[in-house]
Amino acid sequence: MAGAVTRQPVRGRARLETRSDDAARIIGPVAEPQYGEIVVGFDGTERGREALRLAELLARTTAARLCVARVCEHATGQEAGRLAAEVEALLGPSPVPVESLPLTGGSPARCLHQLAAKRPGVGLIVLGSTHRAGLGRVLPGSTARRLLNGTPCAIAVAPRGYVADDLRVIEVGFDASTQARAALEAAARIGRAAEATLRVIAIDPLPAAPPSAAQAAGEAARPPGGFNLQEELHEAVSRLPAELRALPIFEHGDPGNRLLARAGEGVDLLVVGSRGSGPVRVVLLGSVSVKIVENAPCPVLVTPRSAVHCPPEGDSRRTAD
Image (tube, rainbow, N blue to C red; front, side, top):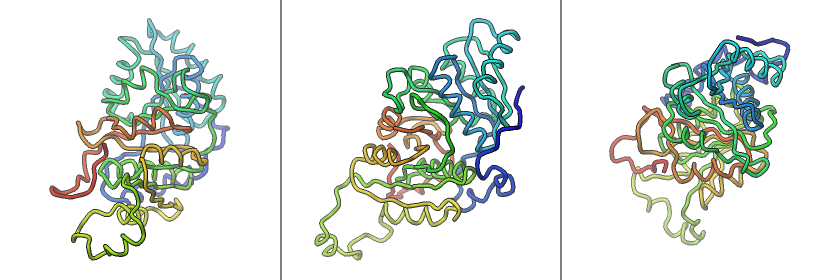
């Protein structure tokens, strides 16, 4: 275990400990625990170094422990020592408690999946992008692709060429589904710890109606209790902590394309939820999240399916795809 204390923590770190559960009460009963431990898959390549930079930033921001895992032929104490020295040389002085952990027993995806399943404190796995990604773009490699479907914790992917910086602006996709609310809480927790600004973006895939048609229809035409994404967006944002300076953004268009376009406007982290169907507490990609993790111009974090806050039967709101 290693970790010096000379690097200054990110903004808001000291305030996090005194206000640990305010966001959960304000946002609603969505189960998205703060990360106790973050695991980063580190293979010594440039993508591994990029993943390590992102993982250290997220661990420093959220006061989490950091486990640097490398799959090797023999998980010996000597190998652990070499890994620890390599990590220390890359990170320099850091306030983050770091464990260097060599793993054996299969493919990197299998080893990381088993590690997350066996260690209950693991809330996030961080990986780098393949070398085929464009510079500054996210594109998961084979290990990340396997972990992005079925891993029992959140997954974050660093873009190619990533250099860690403060988290100043966090974007989260919102469609009022259970999984989008889980993503919103995760983004709010990270954002509050970093004192970042939150952009909550809801995209209606239907084209906007002409003003005349909308006026003719009127609000009275909406069925009682009918779903209205724009209203759901503003209601969710109104419940967020004021210090997040959360900005609700409602647009029409292709959800994946619009979220990617907005991510190119100075966003430091993009958070999305898993698809709406499948086992709970695992990451499962839908069509929108697949497009995002294959094209984003910033780090992407995908939250696992939430086990609570399910809409009642017959609720007309959408579910994440």
